Image (cartoon, rainbow, N blue to C red; front, side, top):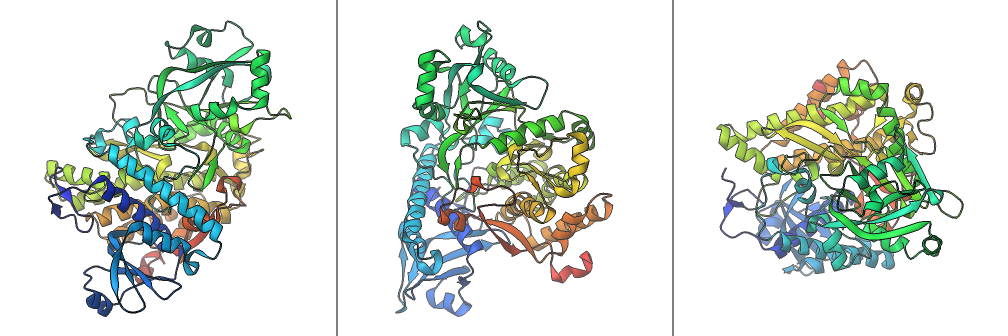
Length: 611
């Protein structure tokens, strides 16, 4: 399949005119919003065949009944167990039988403010509506910037290109690009989808006003100095130990502006305990999470506390999160890390070995000031990969996803069947990316929150060859394996609030690794015409069954996937509508809304296969 062709979202048929940035943004907004709503709300249905004929609709059509007896309709050319591919425009079919197209914003406003769908709390409805509009505007700016983009094929992306290739954000979220408080100028500087690059705000801080933690032999202060020394353009006083009582610390520009306005910080500056140098040094690049940054020459990536709400939560790091990071670094720097490296040679876990923060009034850590240091193995700008899974699987209006485009081109170059190559790709993805994480859960009880943005795939000849997992602050472990892990690290879980019973831990693992990750990958290949969905799930079911039978450890998670009628999914629509800060919950007290979806691995037609 020729990569220069443009394809319709419905059928991958070539079209002559590529979509405009406005059309791409509207499609992305509608797709993410509807996928969240349709997954969580059971009040909708498909039109009958007779109704479609009456309205002259050629595709399956979703019907969303409203409180006033009108209905909103939207054609859905493709749908899978995890995703719906939509075709704009919306249509309003009123109670008198008249049907007319309506604008996207009119349709979304109707859905958000309709009490049948979104409850009766008007203040929360309008808060969500404002965030949906904000997200849409952010996507519009990104697609305008991308209008003339001649980006490399996915297998040629550098690490930074892969991080910034994701434009529309989470594919199952009503407001995937909303950012409370962020101005247009700030967004242009700081946002990954707008190719944000910026120097960090450097300070020298007296150790007496700092809190730090390290999970390795080097102290966090030594890591900070190592980071400063890696940039020869920084002022010399930041790169040398002129005064051993001070530590060079890099803040995110957004973070710095707010910290510098705090009375205690102002006082420290006046007393000489804190010496601001401002935005200096080489530019760092915003990664997909926005609060994480990367520079090829730096020994560490950095993750910051940002006191802004991104989608569902305030992105202020909690002490429990940074403690999880250093505990995992300590765990993996010892015998267990050696064992994992030997057992899973194609897996790299990017640890977060250190953190620093200013002291709060009680001598603890001021959470708004956290700076986390993360492993950075990506030092060559000309080196390809790895590619973030979310970027590979992003739906594109008028074209296949980057993943499917890769497979179509590889198949053409190798004169292979695209469908056959897609099956090989999914098989390699399972072996490299999914099964190792489930095996680690079975053997060691470790849970990695490896959703699409935390999973990066190194490609070789277009095929998955190595997995990189990040965000150890989202890790946990099962109570059933606590004693085993404590033998490696006696204090594991202390102050981290991430030791959970299997009934909670396995549900969280299910959402992140299976629903958010694997099901979305399958849906991408199915919707792009590369795979039969039933055949794909038959294959995956057999793999899970083989893993359950071969493991000498705990098979409970495999059994859950094979026998449970439902899987757990996060309800981003309900969570966004509720206006909670989901980051405030711990493993046992999640503030996000979770619910059950049908389990495609437990197919009754194949009950003999999983008996």
